[in-house]
Length: 631
Image 1 (cartoon, rainbow, N blue to C red):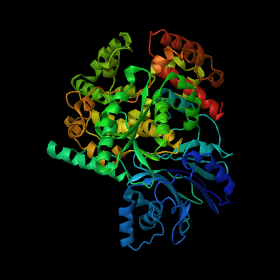
Image 2 (cartoon, helix red, strand yellow; image 1 turned 135 degrees about the horizontal axis):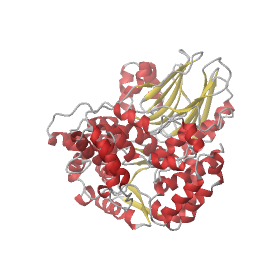
Image 3 (cartoon, rainbow, N blue to C red; image 1 turned 120 degrees about the vertical axis):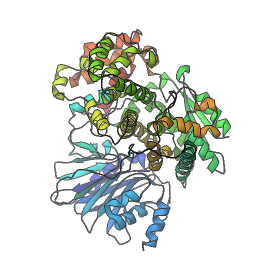
Image 4 (cartoon, one colour; image 1 turned 60 degrees about the vertical axis):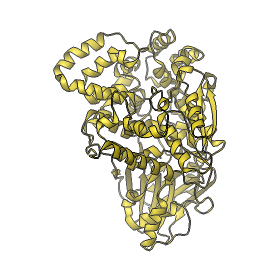
């Protein structure tokens, strides 16, 4: 796992200052503390920071191909590199190292842009081809590894693993995109189709970008997508066996490393599944680690201990409490862009704990998206069935007024929140699911935004790109569309961003076996009744894992990695909640109605409403803007 950065002149070819590329890489040192390198040629410069995982001594970067035609910088791991290497050797390729980086170079020379279709892994890489005078950028299928890029005023394109790599370049403009503020306040993060800064882009997951000298910046090209349009025809028992085979292969392929390896263990279905297959494949004890909370209602550490004992792992655990709030400054620095998923704090803490004994850790991320494990997906499938029986006009005329009039019961379980249900049923499927996934609904955003900010957005609503994604998805049902949107929008923007930044901050490589693209493709073909059954999400995954895990682990209510922010902001952090309305940083932006923010903070502290996620968004925005120095 590494950090990469570089420059490429799209217009007139000019010399590239190697020190400029080096500075872009130096701010990524946390991603690669084991080595660094810079290479330049007319019109191009590539930089690399290395975290050694495979072929520790033999694969320094930037790496040149044997025939000196191509040069690569690479962030990630190719899990099938030995199989690809064997195929390339049969075609005449020769190798000087034992790692996966040289395999990518040889794959490029053999297959060109199609090389990515032969690679199974998590990656973001850049290859400069001397013969063709091109720069090829690529990002893995699900978006595990990030890649930012932007055009600069001198006619060059700059790219880096994190936004801070671009921020190190003096020509980068630091103008905030007001639409990104709308996106952030809606989702709690800035999704991959946007950046906090004008002109900065993120290469979408499953896309490549081929750049040429003396040519304008082209559009990224998609090389992979997941389709829900086909259903498996096999019997459930056969599908269950196939699922177990995919799980075993996915986990075992990600256990290849020349450094100590372990796993995150929350005690939930997903991480427990990964640990079960690791224990089966490992000769020694699997190293596991978990994080608990000082609020009992969200603490899962006892379940993690139970699974650790079941598989006799070498287990370590710690507790996160509200007195660790000062870490918010560090968290803001990790993400560059504002990021309000409060589970980033415990995720960082568990990464710190893991790094004390391992360099690679396997996680359980991705199963909820692929197998329909989120409660919102289950509710959405149920609501879609109701919508199919009610005419659109009736739903809008009757459900919307009822939803608007019904009191907001934040404290109640979702089935009892009639306001939420009625509002969801009043809209179409994509609109309702966007509301279910959003952190702050549009009516609240319009209350807290200033008139100036509303004007700057020019009618833009953050839900529109999300709804378009669902409406045009390769799916057969509402549940399919919800899962597709989660895989393409929520997963790379929130979950994978969180895991990448928090793990890389401590120089830990995190691997996600449940996001093996073949496993994701298999899951997308499961009949709905094998994904959701009797109100139970991840039905087939849980059924298949009954031979490995006890039922009180498999079928207990889903908690997720939830930080008790609501309780903290009413208790020990109430002063922080009140203080956000008086933030000088937010006041300078002119984006918000400070009086309204103060009212919402007091309502939350008094227990009248739950505005914890909104308040946390504002706190993180305040800290991120201070770190970026752009206001």
